[in-house]
Image (cartoon, rainbow, N blue to C red; front, top):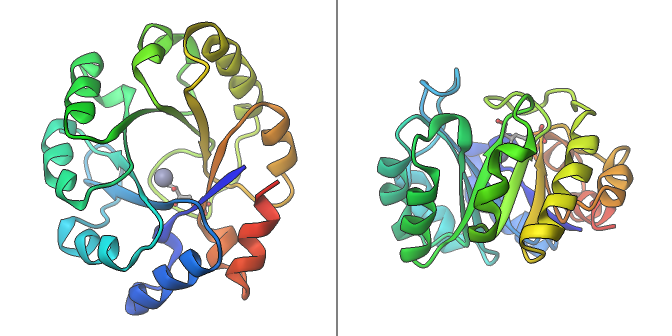
Length: 213
Ligand code: DX5
Ligand code: ZN
């Protein structure tokens, strides 16, 4: 299991140290939550903050867009050279076109599904995707309770992935901890995002390793 700590739960007063600590602590990706105050009822950070984060991070960035105007934000964050950019299917009229655009920028495209969105919605996009991110909380905030129906959803998605594109990864985001990590692993999940669990632990390295099952 790969682990992507969400910097939403980091101490922004000492962000450089926090980024160094999770990278030295053995994380696989650095998860960056971008919120526009329209698609979700919260706002976070833009390239003014993410560019310096990208310089300090020794692990690749995983940018999760929670925005209405996906194309605008893809162009804004492409210079940060993330490994992945994921966008919500619920906010995009032309997901297939946007996937091609992201790939054309040399970035791996991923799509995010909110808790209510069935995996079948994206069946015909799977062959063009590197990853699908399943939300296990309602997007907008860290520290929320894990919505356990995501486990069944991951199992269904895994079957579709096996049929359409076995190289596509499954990522789960929200409320992940050392209690639910094993059921996620058993359901075929490849990557987990963990914000409050990692940054709420005194020992980031220990917390990260407890999820790398
Ligand atoms: C929520 C974000 C998550 C969040 C995860 O909208 O997408 O990445 O920061 O935080 P925890 O792990 O605390 O649920
Ligand atoms: Zn996220």
